Length: 99
Image 1 (cartoon, rainbow, N blue to C red):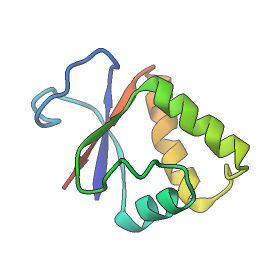
Image 2 (cartoon, one colour):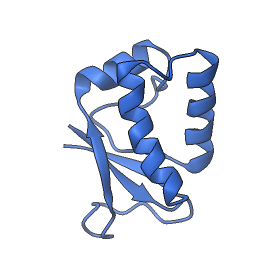
Image 3 (cartoon, rainbow, N blue to C red):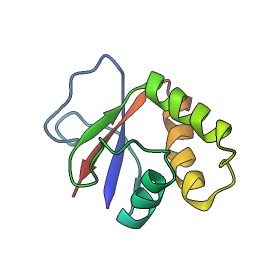
């Protein structure tokens, strides 16, 4: 499972989410992540097994891409949008940790 946590854009990347007491937003399984990459929603530079960060600007870009491709009702995209909605409510980005 790829676990996503809420993080402010200007906050330094912690080594572990518990170290910075980051709020858990949710997760994506490897099949969903692969599907999102195959659909061109998540860039191939992001690796399921490596930590990465999505700041608010990148989340906005991904959402625009989803709208442009008219994939907002896709099952995999809905899972990703749930994570984005949580981050948007807190005006923060997301950081992913592979486990």
